[in-house]
Length: 294
Image 1 (cartoon, helix red, strand yellow):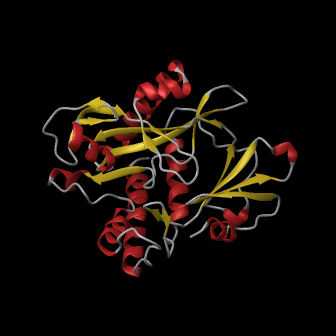
Image 2 (image 1 turned 180 degrees about the vertical axis):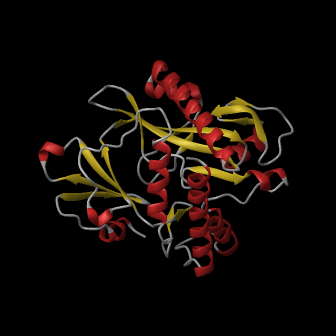
């Protein structure tokens, strides 16, 4: 899906101007200048993999992402960007969030408690992840001695994000801010891991995005948080059996593409069976967390 196609698929909302569409989210600014400090973030049902937006969308995915983000915000004692100043427009109820505009840091704050994904590839080559030395002999999906902060640089539009060292993070945002981002990220990850464990889940890794709230000067958590699009969850029972690849996210989509596409040109249309299985994974994660944890 091209940028033009994403923009044309955005819902028209009275009182709001559509200003941007990413791979998954649509952003709107209020027409009323008195509300210029706010932004409306709408989670679509679009699904992306390997830097492509795929067809068709995943039914109700936007609602699952929004529901889970809000659920986590209610349980994390860190300032976040949600605003209750005005209601979410009816046109995007369940998928939209009224947020305070933040001055975002150019850093994705990734925390890993287990080794997988891009971290596994680097570990195999050098026994490190983002410059952090790890013990030899770890297997894919293995638990790390302790969670590690492995930031990434948020590249300009059209370019790939890049894993960086903590020293590079200091160069980008300054030492005190880098330390604060690391401490906040590890603290939120620890809290979320405890809650996930109560629901029989392992939070293997996740990413956070922070910015400065202009009104308070505080470092504030923004974007989505601890969703299947930003995190890797495994069933604890399956992990104990040695199963490490069946996560509660769009891994089903990635696996199908790896088997059916050479990553050249336009990706193929997803089969209905893959779409429905992926939707069930999102739904099951929301249900397991919200039903097990009050």
